[in-house]
Length: 126
Image (tube, rainbow, N blue to C red; front, side):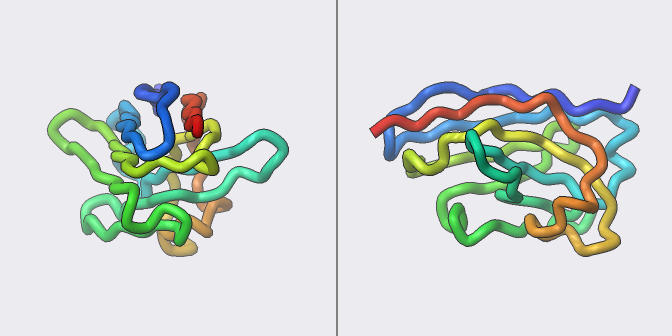
């Protein structure tokens, strides 16, 4: 069964760090793009960081550029998101996703991502 399972969410104070991980089933590894998206209460789900499978190109939203790093651990079939210097506005449910590259792999191409994890909560307090 094709699936994505996130872990690593939690609560942290502003300025702190968290690392999210997503276990990626082998079927999804055939997807062209993997990424992290987030959804705050009452807001739309938006892209945060994405990566092109195989090529390794990474893409970040302006709001997280320089603070977050996306990486793919091929040996462990895991997609990671290292989040540093967290801000209160980073509070959201974070989702791992896999998709095609019909629209490229950038965070703004959410409609091309067709497989989603269940989400993990990240709460940043001041």
